[in-house]
Amino acid sequence: MPNQRETTITNELVNILRNMRHGWELETAVHAFIKGNSELDALVIERGREPVGIEAKFATTTNAKNLIEQAETRLVLELETEYHVVGKTLNNVMAILYPDRFKTMAGADINPQLRKADDLQYKLVNTVGDTVAHFPTNGWATGTVGDIANALHIGAMPNSQLEEAAEEMEKSINKAAYLLEDAIVEHPAIGTKIEAILHQEVFSKEKNDTEEKPNTQTLRMAALIITDAFVFQSSLAGKTEMESVRSLRQLLPTIDYADVIEDWNAILKVNYRPIFEDARDLVEALATDDRLVKHILKLLCEAAKDLVDTGIAQIHELAGIVFQKLITDRKYVKANYTLPESAVLLSTLVMPELPRGKLPKIADFACGTGALLNGVYQRVLALYEQSGGNGRDIHQRMLEKNIGGVDIMPNATHLTAAALASRYANMKLGGTRILTAPYGKLDNGDYAVGSLELLDDLKLFDREAKQVGGKENRIVDLQKEFPYKTFDVVIQNPPFTKPGADPAGIDGAKSPFQGSDRPQEYTKTMQTILKKKITHVADGQAGLSSYFEVPTFIQTTISQS
Figure 1 (cartoon, rainbow, N blue to C red):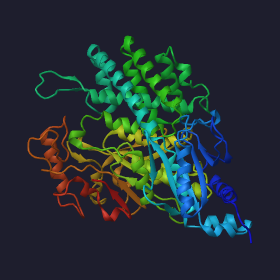
Figure 2 (figure 1 turned 180 degrees about the vertical axis):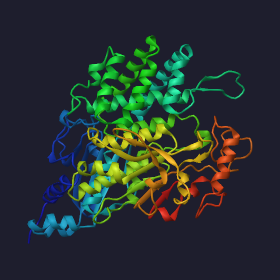
Figure 3 (figure 1 turned 90 degrees about the vertical axis):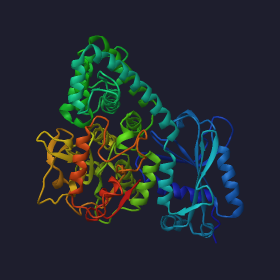
Figure 4 (figure 1 turned 30 degrees about the horizontal axis):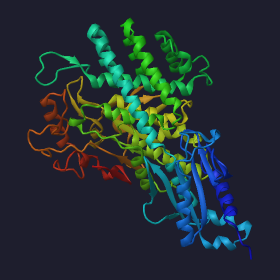
């Protein structure tokens, strides 16, 4: 009867894991550390994510205790240079316990039995700040090799680096916003142009003020969109059809406005309109001020290069994090960003497996910067690759046909499109199903309530929306883009404003459709219009989020409140 060693089982496990995610590199029996002779049973490496060590033993009470202690001793050890991906130390170890039956299993049976097993035990041991954390905190998770693959992927998310990078990005954007403010004071035409590009007021009056001042929120948005374009440019420079596009290092340190415009026009001739069109127009608007345009572009380009140099793969998630920090109007609209780790958890719950025989259709009718939508999409890609496919093969189809997102803020849909596209940044796209919904008072005098226009009967009412496309943006019919009963998953974090939810007079009191720059008559008219919509759950008392819960649209919905 065979007496299998743990290393034999681990070798077979690694052979299975190798084919479960493109971009993974796995090694076994790894001497990964600069000092000491500690050896990892295996190491998982993926560009832009933290490396994860693997330590494994057969499942006994003693082994379980020893395995956790062993995993903890590997944490924060400095890695050899070849394993520096994000950071220089090992911050994550996956501890795995094999069922006892594998001890006596014939060698030829180990691989197929591992693929079938659903009782593998695992625990992620990692560093959080100066402390050691376990997930799950108590006991062990139990599941399949696929579950372990998911846990390895999630465990490699460099959350602390993301937060640090977001803080640095925010500082640069705030500095640029102040420079923009100076430019607008001297050249009001710049502010007028920015207002037209972003569909957001540049000049506003604060309470008790007698004169208009530049709107800091809008200027931050402008700086963020330019920074985002620089980050994306780094992914495209020198690629096919982009041979003339400069890298960020080639633009710096003596960045020239004309070079930036030349590069972005070259990119726009190929594709990538959601990322570069507004950014280019903003830079052209800034060029009205010869004195400051160079300083602003240099500041934002350097910020983008610093982000790229971190090696963080989830770089466009940073834009979403920073976007929410920059929105001062949140006290009225109560928009809330979904953290990347929350998006991963919700996405895994809402999509435990892919639908049989087809790619899923996914929607978010309050998509914001796309954190949830992108979370589900990354889950789809992970499951597709675990089944032996390559995510690149389905990327274009998913973004053009299968992923629908709606928001009322053009800035948000811009960032949603960028986040979704960034997984394969050099792949061209046609039209997407990311739409900016009509909202507020329209040119024809009507009022619109954003994606909640979808509550109307298609036969009775049409409403135009702006579709984000790779080569061009189009005006489309909102209802026809999202027909009933066509989505497998709807996942969203809708606005949860509710009349009377806050005591009268409290700072930050909220009401549906209220905004700091919106006349009260607009708010009241929009509330009246919403009451006339066809609803299934909402009764006007439970807040806006209840209007997003429409059973005829969906099979699955997760709404956060």
